[in-house]
Image (cartoon, rainbow, N blue to C red; front, side, top):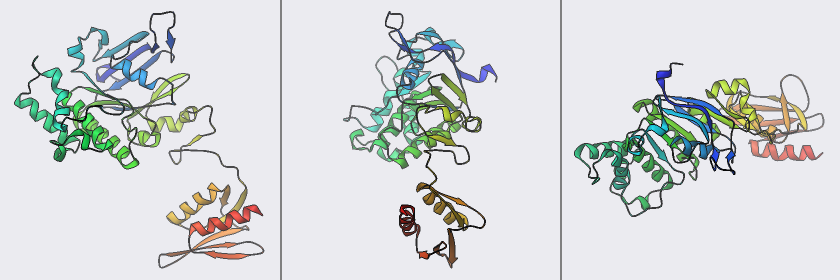
Length: 339
């Protein structure tokens, strides 16, 4: 890796609380991590591991205990506050507590590091604010009161404010918290787009693991032993994701890119069919602890198709049943399992 491509370097960084006091508490082993220019990094880990503390430490909102943070190859403590505000923008969890301002006014706050001491916006500043609002898809809400927006739209406005701040690095602490599923996907996709098109470096923490590993260039995976960094694909292939929840029976399935809880096999059947119908039928059976296998055998479930209409046929040595959908097949299989 070329060092000059790094926007951020953490070198033997120790994070925690009460730095330099008798009550000093270190949360993680020394960290050696990096972020490249234009790279999107997802910080993943269980609750209480120190994700928020790490992000706040990177943004100099929380004191480090030891080690170094280098931003653009310069130590973080060497930046004046005004200089740092032009380098890093931070988006907090939960957005804002002020609801009597317009979207334009909220996003304009991001220009303060670049304005004069009066905070007056120039024509160029206004252009950047409007461009930032357009980038997050809120152009039609520019004059609207921020309190009239949905949670997802408010989060977009906060990201627009960070864009208007025009920093090289954007740090977001749980930006998808409190959002519904479509808004979670849209928000992370938006961050991905900004990273690619604006060459911004983005670090965001998340509990939406499946979304994060789908969109991020790199994952910082936090466990009790420290933080491992790599592409999500390399972490999946190496089995590293299985260390994310050591006290749980959850396991990562590399072939599907998801975490699953183990289900005890209670029955084995022969399953025949094709395509998506076969896939979803097998999923439903697996949920009951019924393992499907190919080849000869009894009992069996066969999926028949006639002009796009499906029938599920269950057959054993003593009975043969037909079902018009998976739901009713599963109801019957529950009775079979009861014996």
